[in-house]
Image (cartoon, rainbow over the protein chains, first blue to last red):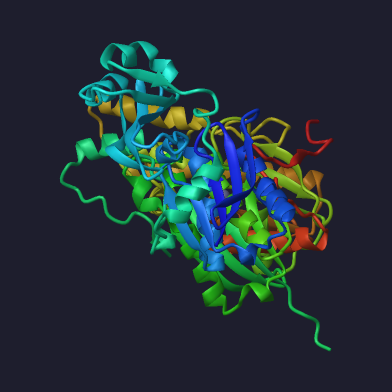
Length: 239
Length: 345
Ligand SMILES: [Zn+2]
């Protein structure tokens, strides 16, 4: 199976091409953040390097969020457009699960997180099982204090990765054994994403695929608070 | 042998409409699928950029699938993919740009970046061929500008709004009148049942340039309404609407008339969302009586708002001129035409 993997959910841009569990090519770029400009040229370059044409790709895997909204949409739009137009399988993998996939220690407890500003994080808790991160605590947008409390009950080492070091004080105070990630482990990579996606289940409704923002827009949240009864139905109409 | 027809798949996602069209030879609409988010933004009284971006990605693949199906064409039939890359909301633009670039790559098609404002002008192409030199008055919720076109594919701004766009002013005074977003249509209707009794200021009307300003008018309007509220006086809503519209239309028509005197053209094109305004269409038609050698071309009502068809018509011209983009195409939220060198005097 030939796989294209796309990860643009945060500052790094990462693209990989895999075939049957082998990473054939991978780019991970952190020096600049111009995903809209860089993503497709990088896909094209890697495709040329490995000698694949678009019709040969069997599956597109995309980091589906959480992360930066614009970054997520660039990756997700590219992935769902490709899958829809080429009738290719599409697999969305949590951006946090992808990061947790950098930890290869079987049985390890991993807490990947992205700094969401104002002492908030996008975070989840995963157990590495047969080499795959399995969620223990679902991905969520949460106050770092609350997340630290959630995972405080575990009396074992927790691998805190991604932006975890931004919250060193909070995490060390709450967790008895916290191990911070190395720079390599903190970096999301599309090669890992592709490996996880190879084992994932394809989405049945590609057209309805959207990023997992894990957070309403402020306008929407305020509106729902004021209109608790109103249904949040279909707002987009074909005319 | 018959000449092969040119088919362009065109994307528009700069604001709150996701639209994809298939255009034949730059002047025939084979399909024009428009998904509007108006119902969503009405909840907030205006377009919320992040909400708009989220809606675009919800529907983008269904839009291009439907456009191809309705046009009854396949990717093999297409000659190019065109897309609006600015101006507009960056997050919204990026959905269309990302989708169009991906389609262009996987189907080996050239990519044509289109300026949204050129798209609005080319909505008129579905009425008749554009003859040069031409002038366009572009009026929408985001823009108010006069564009001079010395020849095909050449655009020069000679005047634009210094503050609010005309459509934006409609929405703001609409809110004060209790008219829900978008207010342009209802205010226009109401205006036709009233008289200009308030005589709001016509900003910059006496200046020699071709620029517009609508924030003073908006403030005068709001002050009038607030003052009446304070003293418990009720104002005639129809007269308020008529007075506001008269002030907007006066300035647009005066400036356009002056521009036509300085730049004699074969056609004046009225385009953009506010081009659907009946008051403006009527007054402009009357004014044009004094320009015997200039044709007035009104963009079709159903193509005044944002749509993929107009992007396809503009894309066809870019295609003829070889103005292609590549895989690194980015959204340019502040994209605009260059200014004419002699516009300032
Ligand atoms: Zn527009």
